[in-house]
Structures are given as structure tokens and as C-alpha cells.
Image (cartoon, rainbow, N blue to C red; front, side, top):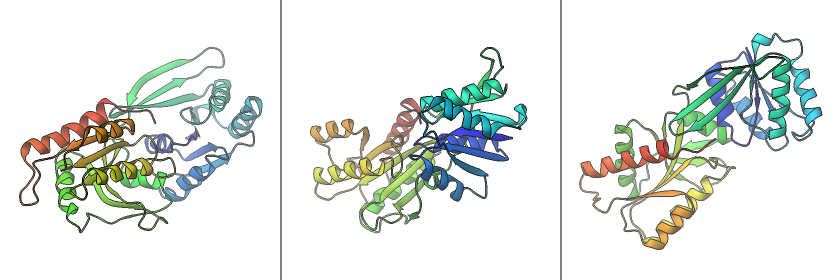
Length: 304
């Protein structure tokens, strides 16, 4: 099977499609803006997927030229051997690919990612008419933290928990999440940034990702502000993407102005005022952590 994907600035839909369909060849239709992402996927997943980047000469905004390019790529292929992924790219690219898929009487696919589930919508197209929808299906658990990091970063290190005092709280928060069925990695540092950026925890459940800063002490609300800034920077498109869920876990009381700032930055704060390095987290605190992460990542999912 040959899979054609329109590649946007978020690489995970194309990666999830590849992991689900397991194509013999996966053609990534990209532009100047997304060519680097396509090449990263090709490099970092060469052992699992035969990604082949193709940069559209039309730039993704000239409908006729874009359609002609996709048509040329699809020429001489059996219709039943091709699936056209309409998820990413520009709207013009989607229109062009849909027209080609319809002309070929091929299969079109669209990945809807909300809550915990990634829902795959597929359609068997016909040369005349819209074609028949195939029952939507939730994708199984395909993503891992390693896959996610490889999709977004050119390189990274996993340094583990902090050796400072805050590392104890990091371990206990991570332990609570693991007991709730989350995958967790600690001390993530993107390549080529030195000591400037480091993420305390990254978590995953199903195909959803959360990025976490854990603050134990320091100079109170100034430390929390720095944590919010770190989350904001790490969640930029150039690092871990704008759709990762953001969390700040703290043992310090949080002033209303910090809570307002966190809300503006779409960061969920979890306060653990009963935390002590001398004893385990209470059962209530463990449940609070698990429930908050579950509610945020399942109940308020955002589209990729």
C-alpha cells in the first residue's frame, strides 16, 4: 500500500497514520515550511517506515499545479493500493488531493484527534459522487514518548530526575502517574540548547502527550513564573509542538495572579501543599495527580 500524506506543522498525524497503516511507501507532501519536518521523519523512522518527502513546487497554494503534481505521483498506481491522507497541509492542498483521490476512485482518510482517542475517518471515493464513508474507528495505542520526541526534535537527551531537592517531588509525581497507567520520562533536554531548556517530565497516555514542570521550593511565585515560561517555550512549534498538554506541579501555595497567568498560557496547575520529602505522597494527592492529568488530557483534548 502507498500512503500519501499532506504534511502540516504538526508531524504526529502523519506519524500516527504511518504506524497504523504500515504502508510499503509513505509519501509526505510538504512545502518550504514543512520540508524540514518531512526529512526529520524520514531520518528518525527509517527502520520502521519508508517515508519519502516530496516538496510541492506549487508551494501548497496553487490549486491546479498542486493537483497536477499529486496526480503525477499517483499515476500508474492501482487505485486499491493507494490511500490519501487529507489531515495536514493547507486547505488548497486538501482540495487538490481530494480531487485526485476521487478521480482515482481511491480511499481518502482523515485523522481526528480529540480527548484520549485518535479517530480515523475513511471514505471509499468514486469518480462520480462523494463516495461511501467507512465506519470511524479509534486508533489503538500507537504513540510512545520516544516516537513523539523523534517527530518533533532533531535530537534530545533523557537525563532522568534532578539530583537537587526538587528531584524527590519529580520522582513521586512520576510514580503517581505510572501507577495511573501513564508512560513517563524525566529530564528531557532538546539537542543544541545547552543548559537553557530542560523539561522535568513528559508523560503519555494513549496517543496524547503532556509536558510537566515540577517546582518544589525556591523563591516562591518567581519560581512558578519561570516554570510557566519554560513550559511556554518548550511548547513552541520549534520544540515539542503547540498541542501538548501543559502542567505545573508545585508544593508551594499559588497566588491568584499566577493562577491567572497559568490559565492564559493554558497551563494546568496542581498544588500539593501537604508534600514532604520525608514521606510518600498521600493517597489523596496521588489520586489528585492521576485524576487531573486524566481529565485534562481526555476531557479537553485539542486537535493535532
